[in-house]
Image 1 (cartoon, helix red, strand yellow):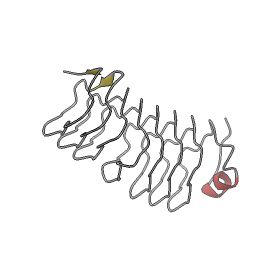
Image 2 (cartoon, helix red, strand yellow):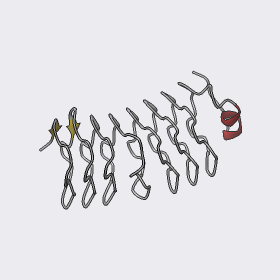
Image 3 (spheres, helix red, strand yellow):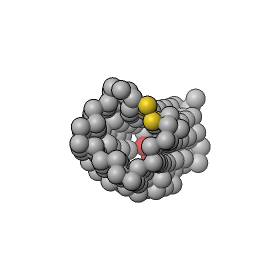
Image 4 (cartoon, helix red, strand yellow):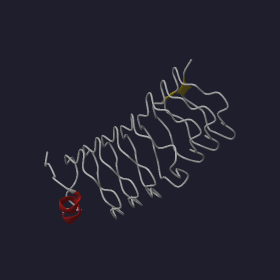
Length: 165
């Protein structure tokens, strides 16, 4: 696994980031549009104010990342580990997919995930109080076990395969 030391080095190697160790790197304000971060270790990375439009984070470890004010339109987070990453203030309505993403234990109170593909996602032990999941796709074993769903909006949501107590 290649270890990068800073955002400049990452940007210079834009097309060679699959499986890279990018943990703790400060990407704040960087233009990472269309970058391919498949299976990369991004734990603790700072994406504040970064442009992540159309980036692919499939299978990446994004635990404890700072995503404040990041632009994530048309980005893909399939199979991404998002535990302890605050996404509450992001506009998630134009994300391609969070299919198979792991949000276990996150505080997602009031988050807007309307219309997003969340198939196979793990929301176990999440606080989804007043979250908007309307018109989302929640199939293929979406886990809500132990989640707080008070006031959550599931209007017109496809719920086949959801589990939880």
